[in-house]
Image 1 (cartoon, rainbow, N blue to C red):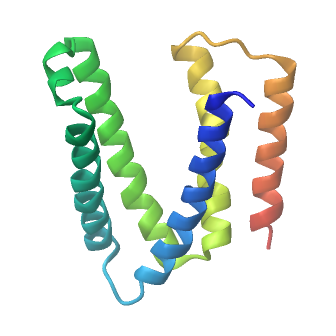
Image 2: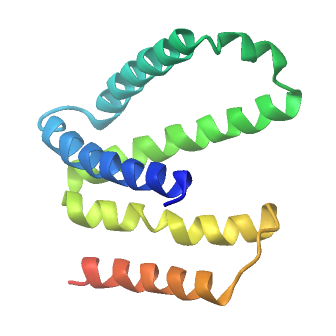
Length: 140
């Protein structure tokens, strides 16, 4: 198994835990406040890992392009988390997460247009199945 696949599977597992724990933690809590608390904890943990591994010096080597796209990514992440937590607060974790994972479809399209990644038949079929799966899960 390629290393990227193992990391992606572990990520998917932790994303599932994130949804379940967040839904449980959102009872009678403002979703924006919950997101801020989550973000502060993540900030502490990730900087702890960076310092523990001795990678903090890498900040000095970042280009303007790195800073631009990491900043845009951070803004997109923040917006995603704020809307995700609000959706979790209002909806079922299983349904909200299914729609959230629809980001796969958006990622494929955006990667094609902005990163010039190829759209293969396999990728298009997979994206179509993900989209159909989202519809099936939220169909009333």
